[in-house]
Every structure is written in structure tokens, then in C-alpha cells.
Length: 144
Image (cartoon, rainbow, N blue to C red; front, side, top):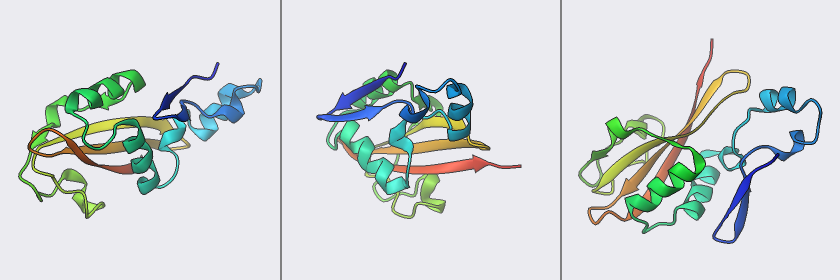
């Protein structure tokens, strides 16, 4: 059965719908990667969809609620407060991913195999007043 949710009037499916009606759904799901549709596409598209789910200006508690609702993996050990403009862990591939002067919250949004293990990572950037000011996304693949 397909699950989904609506945020700010926009509907998002949690799993690929084209496999659900098929008797081969398990195989299809494995080949496509059973991951939420909102993590499909390029980083900027994913970032825009995430901001729809957790709007700019939101407090950390709202992000935590969204993470629990969607089973995102918050990396509690690596939550940091950094000076504004500081490079983040993603700066090597995402040059504009810099601290906004408050918390930097790393979250793994999804992990799937299609055919290699792929992680969709995010950094949520807060200002000193604990308001969300941005999110950075990247996908990493563990290949052979």
C-alpha cells in the first residue's frame, strides 16, 4: 500500500507508485530503489522540496518533527553550532553550503540500493536565533 503526505498543500508520495500495483513490486522496488519520491532528481530540486516540508524560518523542533514523521536519521553526534560563513562538511562538493551562524544539523534523508548503496544526505542551516535559513543536499554512492 502506498503511503504519502501533504505539506503546504502539495502532495508527496513516500514510495514509487509505478511498482505498487505490480506482482513484481518487490523486484521493481529494489531496482528503482525504494526511497521517497522527494529525494529523486538533482540536489537543488530536492532542496526546494525539503523547504516546502520545513519552511525557512522554522525552529529546530519543527525540523525534528518532520524528521520523526518521515523516519529521517538525524546525526545527533555531529550537530554543531558554527560561526556564520564557516565551511560545512559538504563544502567539498557543495560550495555554497556554509553555516548561517547557528546550528548545522546533519540528516540522512534516505538510503537505497540501485544498484549500489546510495545515501541522500542533508545539512540544515540555522541562524543564531534558531531559525532555518537553508538546507544543502548531496547524494553519495558506495560503489565497488
